[in-house]
Length: 519
Image (cartoon, rainbow, N blue to C red; front, side, top):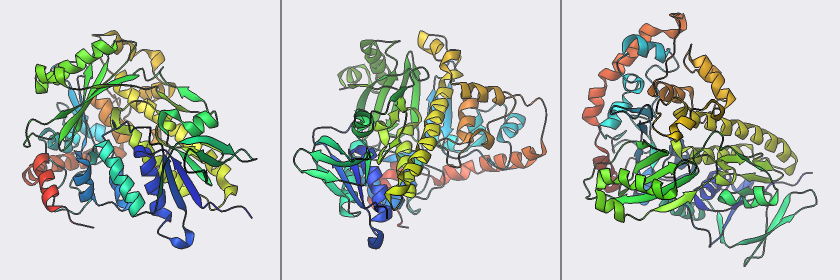
C-alpha cells in the first residue's frame, strides 16, 4: 500500500507561503480524521519584499475560505477597495488618454455581443464607460458597497489594495492560531533526497531534520527547492516582457481626509509605467521600467517628477525610495517529484494587473484540490499541474503584452520597441488577427478558470483603441436589442449607485468604526 500524505512542508514565508499554508490547512486541519499537518519554515534572515499591494476579486473568496474576517482584514492591513485599473497615457500620451479595466463585467456579458451593442449605440463613449457603470463609480472615488452590507458582499465586484507586510503578519497569526500551521523560524542548510529522487527531508540550522511528504517551494526568486535542488530551468521571457527594474516609494497622506482612489492607477512613462495604489493610510507607488531604455538614475528622476505632480517638488525629492530588479520568466516545470513551486519561485513577469497574487491563489487552490491521499498519484498530479500552469503563464504574458502592443506612442525607443512584431507572442498575433473581425469570446480561452476572462481582453483592446470590423454581419446571437436595453438600464441605475455609495474614505472610516455584517 502506498504511503499516505500526512505532512506538507511549505518552505518560505511572505504572501505566497502563508497564503498557500492557509489555503491547504483550512481544507484539511479541521477534519481531524483526515488531518494533514502543514508546516511552514522560513528564514529569519530573508526579509519580505512587500511591494505587491493589489489583488484580484478572487482574494475575497480566499479570505472567506480560510476563515478570516473581512473587517479584521481591513483594520489590520490598512486595506482599501480596488475596483479595477486605470491606464493613463498608454494609447498615445495625449491629454484625454485614459481608460479603465474594471472588475465588474460589461452589461449583458455572456448573453449579448457587448462590442456590437457598444458600437451601435454608444460609439462616442469609451467602451468601459458605456458598458460598465463601475467606471463612473471609480472616477467619482466611490466604494463598491455600503458598510452595512455583509462581509465579502458588494454592489459591484471588488478586490483589495493592502499593505503586503501587514498582510503577511495577519496571515501568519491566523494560520498558526486558528488553522494549526506549525511555524519554524530557521535556515535550511541542506536538502536531502530519497532513493527515488523525492525530497525526503530538510536539514535546518537549529531545528534538526524536517521530514515531509510534499514540499512547497515559496522561497521567491531564489527557488531553493525547484530551481537550485532540482535544477529546473528558468525560461526567460524578456523577449516579450522587457521591463526588469522598479523603483518604489511610499507616500503618506497629507491629512486624514485625503481622497482614496478606487482603482490602481497605471501611468505610462518614457521607458515603462508608474503604479499608484491608494491604501487607507498612504499611497504605494513605483516605476516599472526597462534598464535597456533608461538608466537607474534617469528613471529615478522621472519617477520623482511624477510624484511631484501630487506632493510637490520638495517632498518628492526627499522621499525615500528603493530599487528592485527582476527577471521576466517562469520555470520549465512547476511540480517535480514531491516538490511544487508557488509564487516567485515559479516565476514572475511584472506587476501590471496584479497577476502575482492571483497565481499564488490558483496554485495553492489546485494543490489543495488535487492533493492525493497517497504518493502513488503524485506523478499524475504533477503532470496535470505543469500543463495547467504552463498554459496560465503563457496567457499572462499574452495579456500583459496586449497592454503595450496597441500603443500609438512613438515618443521614445521604449514605446517603439514594445510594438515590434518579434516581441509579440505568436498566439497573441493570431488572436489579434481574429479580433479584427470579431470581439474576444470564450472560444479563445481553453480553461473554465482563466486568470483573465475574455471581458478583460475586451476592456484592454477597446480601451487602447483597437478596431473590430464585423463586416456588417449581424448575428442572431448578438442580441443587440436586448443588449441595448441592458446597457441603458445599467447606465440609468448609475444615479442610484452614486446616491447610495459612499466615498472610499468615508466607507473605510465606517468599516473601521462599526465593522461589516458577519456572514
